Amino acid sequence: MELAPLLYDLAYLVAAVLFIFGLKFLSSPRTAPLGNSLGAFGMFLAVIVTLLKMNAETGIIGWPVILAGVALGGLIGGVMAKRVEMTGMPELVGLFNGFGGGASALVALSEGLRARGAFVDPDPANIGDIVFPIAVGTSSLIGWVTLTGSLIAVFKLNGVFRKNVFLPGQNGIKALLFLGCLAMIGGLVSTPGSVALMVGLAVAACVLGVLFVIPIGGADMPVVVSFLNSLSGLAAAATGFVVSNNALIIGGSLVGAAGLILTGIMCKAMNRRFLDVVFKAYGGGAAEASGEKRTVQGYEAEEAALVFDGARSVIIVPGYGMAVSQAQHVVQEFATVLEERGVDVKFAIHPVAGRMPGHMNVLLAEASVPYDKLFDLDEINSEFSDCDVALVVGANDTVNPAAKTDPGGPLGGMPILDVEKARTVLIVKRSLSPGYAGVDNDLFYRPSTMMLFGDGKKMLTELLSAVKEL
Amino acid sequence: MIHLTSGELMASITVLVLSIFLGFELISKVPPTLHTPLMSGANAISGITIVGALFAANARLSAGDHVMATILGFCALVLATINCVGGFMVTGRMLRMFKRKGK
Image 1: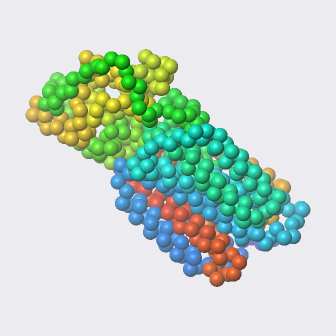
Image 2: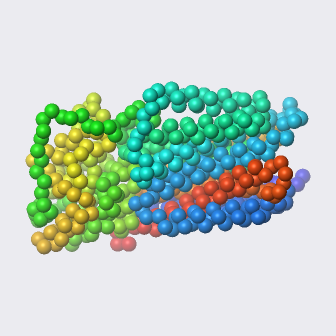
Image 3: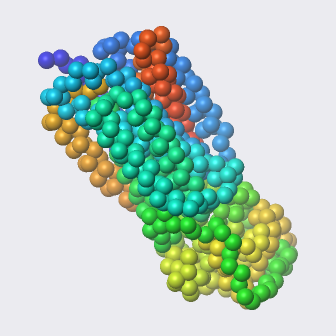
């Protein structure tokens, strides 16, 4: 009995346990930094064990390839992580999701190609002859979909590619592609090592990934990014079956489950079913022209500032518009000035505000707003009725009362922040244009509402100097 | 190519299923404040596929038949390393920004 293989497997298990603790600690603000370090340490351990194992079994014959790969990847990853602005975080997280999926798919393809010779003399007693091609196929399918889907999501997030493309019969095309992929995986089992099938599967899965994300619009991105996160984990788990490694299976499925939970939370916050997000055309189009032309009064910052005179409690509601105009720092400054005047300031964060889960929280954290001033929908909604001013910065659908008044409409049933109950609602927004759901916002026309039209950062800067002079 | 007995396969599938359930339990009570770092930290963990990439890249580039497999392994290694290094670094950067009142 040789001891070494057992030790390697035990070390992989330790790495997996570190991932488990890492994820557990990531779910509380106090322990999260430790959780991240434990995860990183687990990864480092897994890499070292792999090098030791390869050295003992076959010898590390590919030093130049490995060193070059790790150096290049480490350099690119490090530079990207250091350079990214917090406003660019959704794109970066999306891109990393895609890279994870792509890496798993490439490993599967590489191992699949390398194993071609091994099928010449099949061993009926070896169940691996069946498991291996299925694992290669599954990992490729999920991995390539994750890669191309994430790339499209990133293009949409950074505005390179804005259009939500709906092809006629696209759900049928997607279903056919998916069935085709499954058929090719089946084909790999009967003719393992077929290069044509592996390449065909890669191409079909890449197209499927593109078609999956291309019709989905901006405000649904939190759902899509969470789901792609889940897929990147499942691809790694499938790759675990390709290389027979439990660390990949455990780590990958933990991430798969975590991503699914986030996907569920995001769907719930929009009152939409996941299948509807993926398969139904939604919003994005022109709003239906409403019959009556209502007028709305825009205010100057100096007039609007007067509502803060004598206000005791203010709730700030940020939305994607705050991210676009990078207004988080001036929002923080504004909150501080109000607090110095004795005003109670809180932030109300809708779960799907922005373009990824927790987007607003990251931006406000960057601007040094303490996280215990940020409140979730359920925590803050009862407080709007006692609040003097609700200051909405670049949010629309998440505060649209149509979610309640028009149950059958596109927003019907979505949980919203009840800003309408505040004494005065001050809305900073570029224009009256409807939000992602394409529904006109009745809130803009109410007597208790004041509209400040303009770029979030510019208007808040003006508001700030006006309030300082009160 | 792998050699598996049905017992080994069953053990791996069991690990897979239990880990998924464990993942659901671990994550179900995450405050919204941490959604982004959780996602980016979890994504860095999915970079564990780097282990597979190391196996796939461990070959001489001149080794006849499998040059293509090695090149693909190299690409996998680059992507997986970006995912791990970048993912953990950027998550750490984000988490350092989260502060409570009074610092």
